[in-house]
Length: 160
Length: 160
DNA sequence: ATAACCTGGATATTCATTGTCCGCTTTATA
DNA sequence: TATAAAGCGGACAATGAATATCCAGGTTAT
Image 1: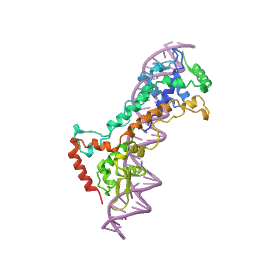
Image 2: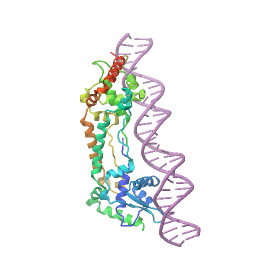
Image 3: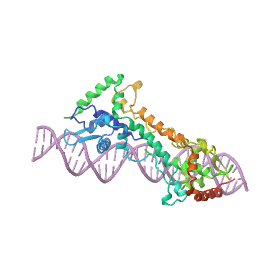
Image 4: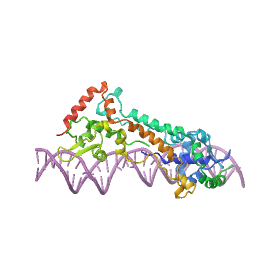
């Protein structure tokens, strides 16, 4: 039981895209390189973010990706949902139904309600904070110099 | 990101063992059959429950498994921990460290704190209820007849 | 002594995740 | 208008964790 690495990667990709000036885009290849992840695979994750309306893509020369929403409007949960999808953390395998030989209408799982409640509690934390919250955290003093380097890199790699 | 099926299986195994009279044990083979799962694999899960001090095993002829704790003292979280272990739901892959070229002492992940909080919220629900709570749920009227059948099966398969 | 059970290690299988590849469309620019 | 650079989507391969099997040991009742 472990969260996909794509969620973390996507969050940082969004923080990168947030450094872009208006109208500019960043090619997927560049993003992948900066994150240090497989570019062909990360393109697939980027498309999931596009499908979830978190970012937009521009095809063609001078194409790339940019934010569709402001980071204040992107909850961590939105990123999780875009990458991992709707599947629940727990799903019954129906053991009890077999053990008690329950008919269709009586089918149940003693754990489902509790697990659902636990999952809701988990999600509620991810729904509480947005990516903007992380951007603020990144403004810590000890990072300022490093951040400037990163912003310079973005200016170098961005197009239009 | 999905919980192992072994957690659900283990919970129902514990409920089965709870039907045993004092001193009696139930062979692992019988348990697996009742749950409808691979017996050789489930033996491994049973040993995890033994390591976690939730159940005890008796080797030799007339051997088997029985509860070590009362189900009132077994939290759902205990079962989860026994099967899935201590690993956290989220662990940083250190992307930010690479992006900002942070030295050892500055290493950090913006997501870690939030994810830890979410996980704690999730765990707190699993820590709240015990297996006894599930046993009560199972007492629902519509199950009474089926439960008697199950208890008869336990009496048939138990030893000593 | 034997049979029935648990134990622990080595190993195989399965499956979701991760990663690659290719042909396609779109668009800036020469 | 041709070319190059980018995203799109599907087919496919590699990886690794979860699941499953097997076997050579221990233990204990009969």
